[in-house]
Length: 480
Ligand SMILES: *Cc1c(COP(=O)(O)O)cnc(C)c1O
Image (cartoon, rainbow, N blue to C red):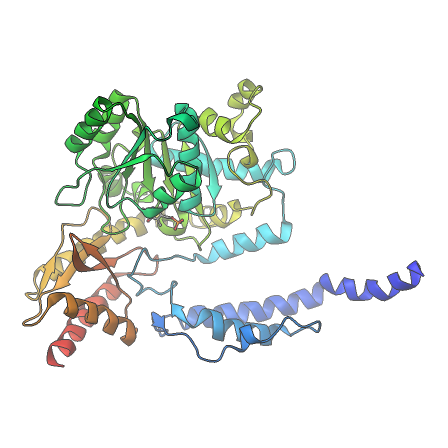
């Protein structure tokens, strides 16, 4: 009975493990699709509204297979086409995405070999690769090699790990939560508040420190807020500074804030999700001075290193603190500190079994070397500055502050009518035309456009096109 059933099942089950020829055919189809996708990027719109008929989602998962070509067609039509083209050189909205080709190959390697990267014992090489990448990032932000960290799925999870580490390192207990104070600003990314909430710290005071005219935290106001809180019997705990805000790319005065946090014995956490990797180039490094004086920091390789989505990182200057916060049994910490490159991700994050994230970053760094990354990042800084300068020569545009990094804020001053309505219509029109994609925000209560340059594919031509499109679209609106 058993043998008979097995003989029926085995040939069907074996279909899960295609042989060499079949693998070759699958890969060829995949490669042909990737090439046609990449080669048509130049012509593709930067935004496309959703399709009406969705056979992808209407079709049930059937017992019978579909062939690769048909699957790719469904994927292209219903997944790749609609929405924002995050791989476009002309995407300047939100924080633009990446998608380095060798990163895709790194993911492929990680999936095919499927090493167990959560625990050193299971995959010592995989864990050391990830720790080496983190050590390299520690060098970029100015941390010592004794820092510890974790490759996460993104900045939000990285914040969560940092917040929990800061909570434990500070010795905050439930009884302290309602007295504890976190200092941040109106421009702090909302993922910080989300991390606090998830970590059970939603009841802490969140003190919004006032900003200067460049949307940077005012250090003097921070000092005053801390003093006022101490006076009132509250418990100042955590300062969150931004190394490049999402809205305007503003860099808080990190050196001064670090000094304040040190004097006041508060934990300083820096949000470098968008901005920290600019430290790979000299002008960026100067603008980000002071980052290394923090206690913890997050970075998003899926932003500043142009990786596909799903790559964040958290670093904690003292590796023992991230370890203690995530691993209950710390009695053998002595040995662990002597072998930092052997720390297991499972002891430094909420995860156990996890995506082997190392190769998607390791392969591009190895294949390209670091120089093209530094060049691309300096190029983005200059492109933003160039765009800002060019806008200055156009009478109908008013500009926000000189960009600290690669985000420019501005709006159109229409010849007549409500500027709010005009600028809102302008963003919509640009998105409909689909040649460039820009997004908007609200600054000091005013509807504001922003141009964020961070795609590795964006170069001077694309900025020129954005300038042209902006003028053309506003002309159409004025005439309509
Ligand atoms: C994108 C971003 C985040 C959140 O990171 P995710 O990777 O989207 O989770 C946090 N802070 C800043 C400044 C960001 O730009």
